[in-house]
Length: 379
Image: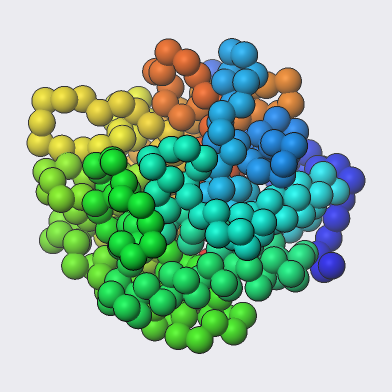
């Protein structure tokens, strides 16, 4: 085992001060204090409240009852990437990662690749497999070598589909049951640009043709880029799902970092600038944008992604402070750390795992003034 272990997290504020440009008004000092403690509190919540006894990470926890949702392989992969990206992990995080890697490994070795038990006719989503693969590679490379081989196995399965079809479908038409759902995750493509991360990562660990597969994913994604910087995220070109749009940005950034491709870096920047033009008056971001009268709900995974993408692309958009403070106002305090809700206006509030990890990385990166992780450990 390599890497550093700590028995407990150090306070997030030690040796740091919040950027001066955000310390604007005394009335916001409590919000700034919340921001300064966010990352460590999210890390505590993820280990102590969001995990199953199996080792899996739950999609969310009901804030009112404390009841967990379902065990989520994709988000368990995200958690492995998140823990691998910490400069110092706690003993609890290391043990949580070990159990999560074992749980995912058992699923892969048994061929149980469905998104989750009993849902969507047990369809197998390639995006989910890519996030699982990267988590296994990231945590395995640093702490648990046997997980690397399983991550490469998943990445190779995706690579072979790319070689066969020239790109990656949302669901493998040869292996997965058909989905009964319609939307960006089943009929769209650009979110799959983020799967380039696991291809590139696996290539550094020995996967043959991983770089070529990643390039194919990126090239296919660019076919859906409009002149304004907007990605067409699904067949209805009038609707852009910002979650998917920003997944494409993240995949482009990872590709640019891994290959030193400045042209792709520029595309990521333009697409991020377009996303920031969709910011709501609240400071948050909507689930979608469209030329319709239907208002989209505010969604915090998108807001956290937008903040993080701004840092990745070296941007300081005018609304950055408003987005930061919007998220800070909505942090959920729990009996075991803090978490972020999915949508602030939902009747039933969810302590959401992926929003919390996105926000922790976004906050830390703004605080540092640059990404606090490498391209292999972008959640």
